[in-house]
Length: 139
Image 1 (cartoon, rainbow, N blue to C red):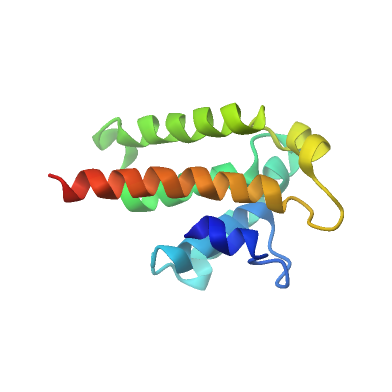
Image 2: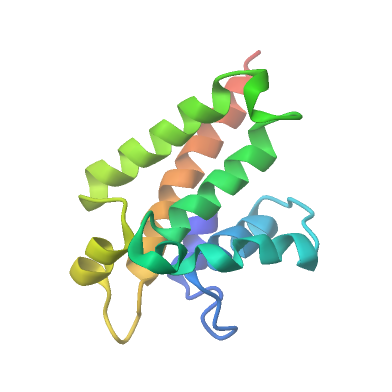
């Protein structure tokens, strides 16, 4: 779902950063109902929070997991911790890192910028969401 949007260049013409592409795209793909004001929350997370730290696509993916799987607050269960760890582990295994600077050094290309990096985060997020939704339906 979200991965397909990103692979097609979602958010590039609007000049969205990596975190914005994930959150705005997830808002469309998963019908989250976030307002334009709420979507702006992702703006400061691009470029590894502007310091090359954890990839903004991953931090926005955690935002999406929180919206979908936290009822009121994180401490109500360990679910968000488990899902976040799964996201990071999957991404680390596939990409070799979770931090922006090494990811950009290895994967960023001038013609597509970080599309591949963002698409991999979207794919990992899609997989987790599909699995969790299937678990909910089987209960």
